[in-house]
Image (cartoon, rainbow, N blue to C red; front, side):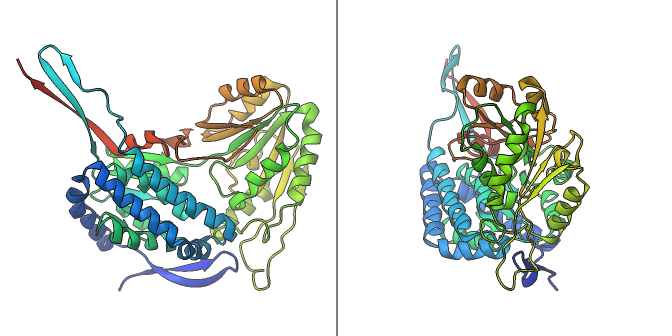
Length: 449
């Protein structure tokens, strides 16, 4: 008998349905289907794959209401957020449909006397894409877009709590790309472990550090791309624009702060600390859980959030409001918070809270602000806020992060690469650079003399 996972509505905390939990048999079948589809999919010229991906993007867009219901069921996020992310997912697919037709290989020609050489970029094969619950469809698009465009077939393992949009996407992919090219495999962590240990050729994983280390141990010498979260610093310099504080808070509470690149640790100079706290608290007080942003995703995330916040020794706390609809009091709601006057080793500073919370630290000077910003082993993204472009740019170049914004935060597009450093993982999402994550070069040299 096939085992199932109970699905919970994060807005109410009540069971909303169930989904199959893939066991060894389902994993083997999914990978085998992808393997059978590989020659036909990889054998198409890029223009043909591009047309198929464009058809899938059109179908996602024309079915936006269905995808919206699927996203809302698993995440509980506001409808406007979900619909924006569905549109962004379609755009990612369109981007890679075009990007794969560009010439990205080293130039061919005579590189040795009497020899002509070519470089072919070939797909890796069957890719296991394991994605998280915070952006179920968008994170899937980030992984499957370049993988499919490059000629791979994909087994997509969605998070246990949010399988809905992945199952819909796989059904639409079967219609537009062909059977087995993209397979959805719902299940729990054991399903993911079985998938990584199966006969796949590469693994793309977005999730926790612990999960990433487990993937590396199981994947062995196979290609692995990891995005393992962030604990993003926000350096606020003297003369930061008036809009800075509201913009920082807006980015913090987007998706209830459940974004790997969300602002988390605000660092300002000591002489500006109190004003920064006051301005952030004012902005946060206008953002209400239940109205302006959604709940945390699941009971485990709620418990982790509460543990970190309760263990914080912040001497100044500003807590906003929760305003939920009738029947949603049992949901996984938590208000936006500002935790100020915190030490460097405070749990809310050291750990990635992954919720609608900002800590505020005082730095002795700009150099100390950079030191504090770079003190976390998670190095995914950061931002700098300042009135002088030269000073802000100088700080941005000194921040050890894969993506740095100046006077904005959490603004991304398919054309620009996104990826972490140190314990935030390795590999690239987005941009043409992501195509190389799912390809390998082959040099062919012909002797003509």
